[in-house]
Structures are given as C-alpha cells and as structure tokens.
Length: 240
Image 1: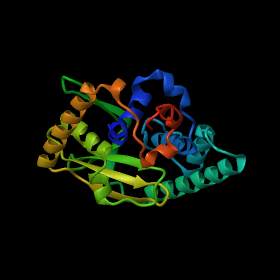
Image 2: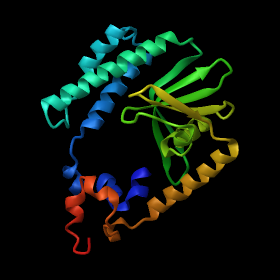
Image 3: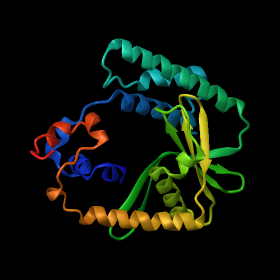
Image 4: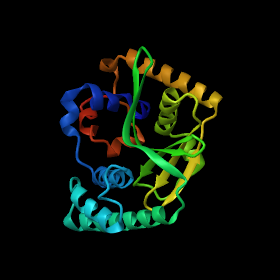
C-alpha cells in the first residue's frame, strides 16, 4: 500500500510485472535491518533459550549477519560494529528494566479477509500486559528518533493495530516503534473511531488498487525517482 501511494508504476514493477524485477538491487540497509530483526526475534523468543545474554546475542549476530549490498569491506565493517553496539545497548536496557509484559509472538503473520482482498501483516513482536492489553512492537534500524505522531501516521503500524483488534476484539491495543540506533521509542493507540476511519480508508485504497489499470499507467518523475531501482525502466518512456 505504501509503495502504491508513493508511485503506482513502482507498485506495478515490484508486484505485478516480473520483467522489471531483475532491476532490483541488494541494499545494505535492508541487510542490516534484517540481521538485527533476526537476532532480536531470537532474543525475545521464549522457545529460543540459547540467546539470552549479551554474549549469546552477539554470537547470534555473527551467525545471522547478511553481507549483501555493501559497497566495500570497510563500509560493511563499520556497519557490523554499529550493529554490535546497538545490540549490546538493547540487551543491557532490556535486562535492566522491570518485567512489565510478556512476549506473546515474534515475527508472527496476521491476516484478515475483507472479502475483496486479504490484509496481511508480519509483526515484529506482540507483548501482553497484566491488564490484558496488547502492544505491537516494531523495530526501526534506520532511524535515530521517533515520536508518537510518527507511530500514529505510520500505515503499517495502523494496519498491525487493526489486524490485532480483528483477532482480539475485546483487548486494548497499542503500537510502539523502537529506533534501534538510539533506543528511543514512542507509543500510540488508535481510538475506536480512528480505527474505524482507518479501516474505511484501507478498504477504499485496496479497492482502488484492485481496479487500477496498471498497463495504462505512465511514469511521472518524482523526488523518489533518483533512488529507485526501476528508474532505467521508466526512462524508456519518451514522455518521462
């Protein structure tokens, strides 16, 4: 949905037109983020008892490291060192805080059938508090700061809250984003009326995507073009 809102042509090349997928390049920030997510998944997974201490987390980090997309060995070494620092601080802070919630799910896919379409989201983590409320936790490896407004306006975070409320209609649900580079976090919870409004918007957007004639879409230059893998494909259009 975010790809479609940013550029319908990019949506077409990403999800519908396999001829352009060979243009997709490995990106270091994806590799870095995926590595950290894998390690944090193991750290919070109660079934993975072998990743509980700092040394065990760092060992899992080395095992999970993805080296795709880096421009040089020096760039990768710098990223690797930064990742170690992030995880060391994260584990230290997690172990020093009082246990106020238990983790129910890590890297769990949730889905809801709306009839015309199925909304699917993979959530980094879901915590349950003593009062029965649920909190979506999402890790962001590329940002230094986050605000409650960032959480409130993030389409994915709103989708996650919607999906959880569909599955657990009697539970209060909130969402938290953690900026891994600094440890800063922020939380927001959609009210019932906000959730209903968001659901209407999602349904309308999904139906718009489903009815879109992507074959007739012509590329339009936007600020995101210069960093898009599909730029070379769009440049084949004489009016681009």
